[in-house]
Length: 291
Image (cartoon, rainbow, N blue to C red; front, top):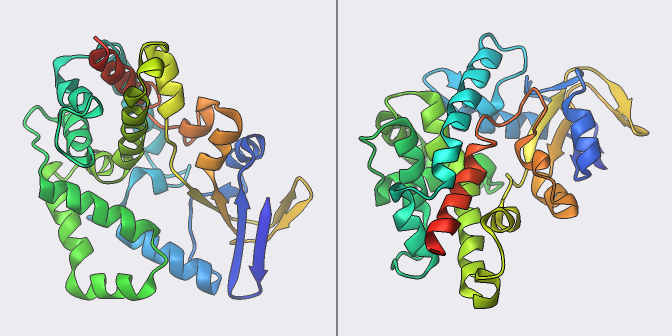
């Protein structure tokens, strides 16, 4: 755990230990309320929330634990995704393009459009990902994470981020959960499919591991997720102040343990509803490619 603090300006705590991330994620003093303080923290969080909000509502992975209806909606989504997991794990036809991509039979340099299409089809059988919709997803992902202030100012002036959200929001029927999946959550799966392509290129590895192991080797968590202290306290000998911003480095934590609950925040109030569906999709891609 590493803390960077300059009173009144910045107060961030970076955590990459899996056990400590679990402890902090369940601490009632640490949440996703996201007040705009202190100065640097507040500026970053304000831009993050502005970027990842749509029609007055935050994207679901930024909602505080006590937000009205959040838990019931999360449980509904978990059931919906989990019911479809077994079908995806079998490698259905809708995964054909991605399986061909990891085999090198698709000319695309990266599989973003194909992943966006699979996620879009989960919500609507009329969904059609395009180069423009994928570019919009890349724009939102960069805007949410970039520390390049000049670029962000220019994008705000030109309306680039707003246009990206309008395009993806319209394609998602203005459903903010659908929008989140095709704009932000998909990037983790894109990274996973990229790892699968590298594994498939190794013939010895291709024929020696089963789908479950291929999934373990390719799973890609979000690089970082954010929390904020709503009151002062201390954990593991490290004090924190009200409004201290926590950065959970999930990718680094997964590399240390290989335990999937770090990726999906399993057994946490903020668990990912697709914690079964995502590994099932990856397993289905591998099985179909290796047939």
